[in-house]
Length: 525
Image 1 (cartoon, rainbow, N blue to C red):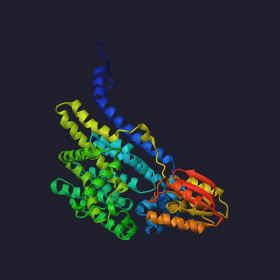
Image 2: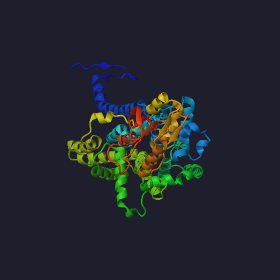
Image 3: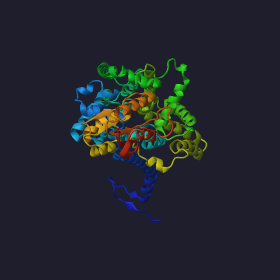
Image 4: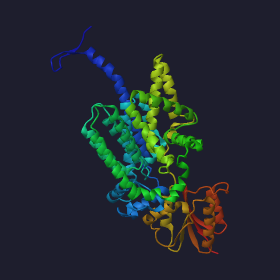
């Protein structure tokens, strides 16, 4: 057998074909794993860009925040916002700067959430690969294709940046609890943490968890960093949060409308007074984080328990960084300071998925002692059930969320309305109309904003009264969006409103879009 020898080493030693083959054999699994990681990152980015590029209309909450952003100065944004909106002042300032630099449109105002969503994928990749290993691919899969994470990465709200900032803080903190830690690591964590307080409300729970971990490590490791660094950083964070709370957060926390709206999202005290709350909250977390079904209610708690124990045994510091923010936000919720429901839990999803991944790792390692194929099966089956539950098709991963597409409706009315025609806006679409009206010339002439009430029956009665007032007034454009059931009414609500208006007038024109409609009626006697 002839052996190829290549004398290209710096010391003149021959590099043989056999040596190259051995090196490739060792590198091949690593290269394949890296390709899997980066494939999932690319998929996540594509799905987020696709959702962003649909350029859907602002829905009610987005439009409410957009209205505040375009009508207020920087100083005005420090005051309580209209429409019971609440967002971190840093987030508002970033959005205001974006509008001034790039213009007033949906693409501009959703750019920061998009960039946050994309950067969050990369941060999760680093944490999963570094601290969990190959089973961390589960966390990256779920994170990349998660419908809620994709959706909020193109919504004018702070929830996508909450996720990114939580991941960034955990990543920087993980560098500060390594065996070899440098002053620059603490300096970077301190600066980013100080900024995060103003940009993300739930960042305070992540920072509090980080602070507890650093103090615990200082007390248990004699060779750890000087206590002075930890003390200074903690004092700065606490001081900045105190200013943020007393100047900006206190009025928001005192908003009775928001407290009533989110009343059921606060943890009950004592906890045993309402065990069902914990079941509902856990199920809400499942729906936010996974394409899942009923089997997840059994599978996920087991994986979380195994993952938590495994992390504490294998890497206690990382385990605490993942778990403590969730415990702290639970305590805050019991004092009615932070609701635990839906989008407010989005920042907890990365840790949730990483702990599940650690649970899968633990199952595989335990079963692989007897049989590696058995380990693959026992760890792989939960992945299939959680990522690809029965009834899920590829089409469901490709669907983009459009919501109530009111912009083309308002644009159509603006183009076809005459000066003598009245515009009536059904109350559920009031904030969207307020934002879009000046863009399409509907901020002039006779405009009536419908009777508003959070109670469905009262809102319906208000609509009846409004129509009674409009009878005999000539031509009226009725704009509807976000129509909900009226309680006692049966059937399609859109059809219900049209049939009701048909009793008092003649429909002359209409324009329909997803969950948004406009009708021109002649209500003359």
